[in-house]
Image 1 (spheres, one colour):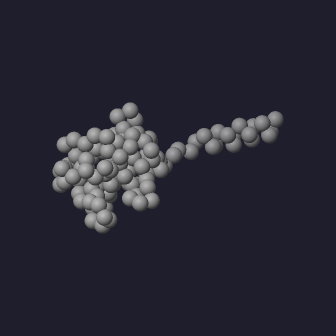
Image 2: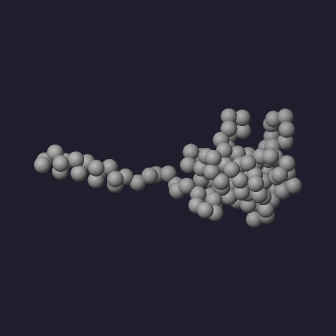
Image 3: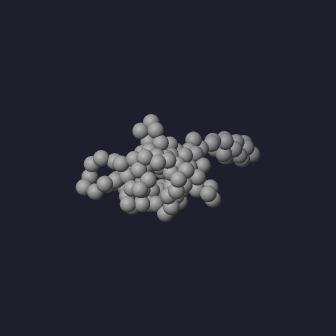
Amino acid sequence: MTLGVLGVLALAACGGQRSTLPPSPGASGAVALSELAHHPEVYADARVATVGTVARVSGGRKPLFALEGGHGTRIVLEPSSSAAADLGRRVRVSGLFTVTFELGYEILVSRIAAA
C-alpha cells in the first residue's frame, strides 16, 4: 500500500511542471517576431504570420531581404524578390517558418501586405 501511495505522489508531482516555452501558433498563425527569433524550436516548420519592417541584408551573392523587429531580431524572407518592393515598409508576412544552415531563420513567404 505504501508503494502505491508513493507512486501516485510521484506521478502527481511530475504533472505540476509547466513548460517555459511559448504556445505554438494558433489557427491564425500570429506570432511576434521576437518569439520566432527566441524560440525557433517551437515554430520550426509551422505556418506563421508576423509583423516587421523589411530591410536589406548585406553579404552573399544575391540580394537578401529580412523582416526586422528591433533589438537585432531579423528573419530572412524567401524568395527575396517577394519582399524587395516593400523595402523600408512595415508589413505583415505569412508563410512557413524554417531554420537553415545557410540563412538561419527564414520565412518562406506565401503572402506579404502592408501592416
